Image (cartoon, rainbow, N blue to C red):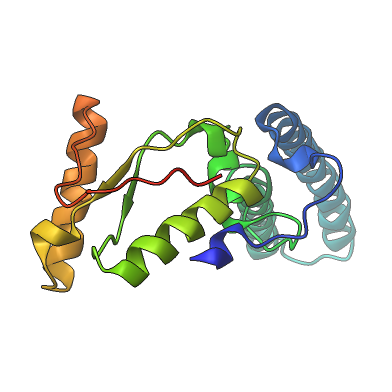
Length: 193
């Protein structure tokens, strides 16, 4: 779980995490792609003229070159969307969870509820809550901005995939209704800094 927050945190925020910056960059990249396509079509006209002057047939050549230009333009568009839209790639300065949130213009402060494994064993109760606390600290969640926790394992047991599905549905119900249910086995709640 800690790997979702692992990063080499820079001293200043990275612009790539700002959705406005990425929007501008994507628009600029799209202009570059359009210019590239226009330039390639102009060069194609020159190539066609050279072939025609040499008495060569150009029909197949034109169709092939146009298809190549369109295919390359699509590849460049996809690459731009991956970079500036979905933040694909790996940057050790950006934790996977921070990256996933930034795609939608969110931060750790926007997480409204979490669903945890919560086996209700002494070791898990202590360790799992500390891990989540460490994750939110690493992602600079505002201190005091508590995250409600849903721990359903005591209700679902260990039926493997079934438990995961039931827990996901419980989390979806919580998001849909805005109600975070109490944790049935919670007897002692310790505040962690």
